[in-house]
Image 1: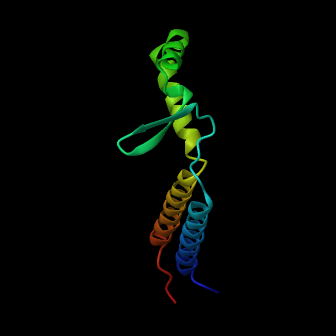
Image 2: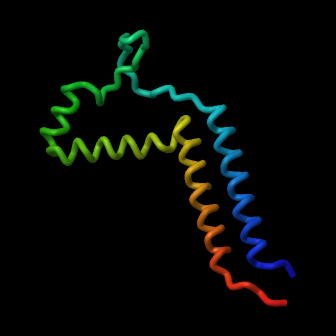
Length: 116
């Protein structure tokens, strides 16, 4: 039978390879096109999308209905939702796979040595 420590080392390597490979494929295939663009603004030699949540009226209404906490909660919700689409998804998968592989690797380090 194979040593459990060796099996966990192998598993952590497989997790890293599959996770990073998936992240690279997703990154190459993904586009960061925003869905709800109102228009575009040119500045500094670049073109930037104008989102509804960037307008002063939207922020004022959000603060009016729920206060500063509502504005912060909306920003947090939009940030978290952005992690699961486009190129951000590739970074998220790479980080999750690295953390998971690190956890399996550290579990392998904590196993007692087997004497033959």
